[in-house]
Length: 200
Image 1 (tube, rainbow, N blue to C red):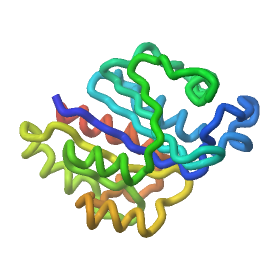
Image 2: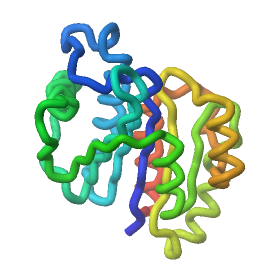
Image 3: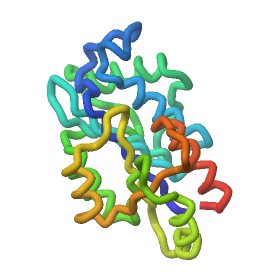
Image 4: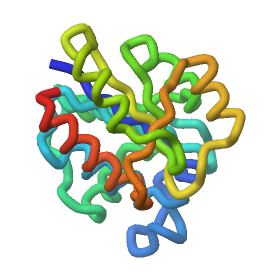
C-alpha cells in the first residue's frame, strides 16, 4: 500500500511550549492551522499516513515534527487536545517519549529533500495545474510507487526560492485542487478522499 506524506511549513509556528491555549491564534504563531492539518491527516485512519510539520517561529527554529501513522497511538480529537499535546512535545525540559512521534532540528527544505527520495512530490498552490491531470498518471504507476509526498504551506505562501528549489531540484509537480480556494486542512481531506476512491 502506498504511503502518503503530508508536509506543511508553519512559517511562524512557535518552537516552544510558551503559548496560550486560550489564544492560539495570537500566541502560537498559528499552530492552530497545524493542529487542524494534523486532525485532517488522520481523519480517515492512520495506517500508512505520515504527517510532517516544520515550525519556523521563535525561539529555536526550525523544528520538524513527524507523526508516523503506523506507530503513533491515540491522538487528540480536537484543537484544544492538540494544543495540550504540543505543549508537551515542545517542552524543552522533558525528553520526547511519544511512540510514533519525532522532533528534530531540521529545515523545511532539508526534510522535503529527504522525503523526495521516497517518491513523487506534489506542491499544492492556487493557480497551478489541476491535480486531476496528475491523478491519471499516478493511477497508472501506483503499483510501482512506494510513497507520495504532498507539500503545503499554512496561511503564508512559501518563499519564491523555496518553490523554485522544490520544482527545479526535487522535480515537484505543481498542482491545485480546483477553482475554489481551500484551507490547508481541507486540502488534505480532499486529497485523502480522492486517493481513497482510487484505492491508494
